[in-house]
Length: 212
Image (cartoon, rainbow, N blue to C red; front, top):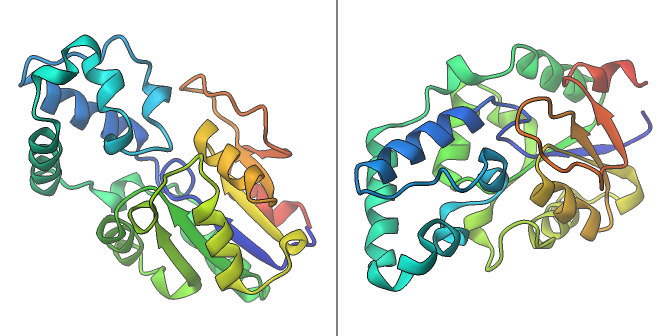
């Protein structure tokens, strides 16, 4: 592997959070009589709730105060935080440490909130390894818009041809590709995601160390 920098997505790449997110979202909405059974879990992966209310509520969209729903959901998430240490992939810390030792610059570009990103990284004591940490809330448009990866590439100060993006979701892969960066996917075997735009695949993070 000849890349000088790697920019990671977080959810589904460093932490196995997607099933937790789906269950938490489903419980919150069920309590309000809102079903998401018409949407596959893969629909939510790689984005954020602000993007999807129209799809969730469909014909009932105008009947709801969506801003209040979003605020209530944010409060609900705060009361039901993710147990990051129990959701981290078993090779995440060792791979991050090994890549850092190799002198590869590391970045993170996630659709999660900045506070959640920092909580996750701090829970495993790996924040210091990342030269760049960006959240989707810092940008007007979320993935698949390429802005977050374009900015991450700018801040990491490497030519684009020397940067690898590691993603899992269709939205994230599309964002990396649109930013002009080589984008690999962690192979999905659970959610039925369309990963066809990825230039390469890994089955687990440790594969990055074996591609030298």
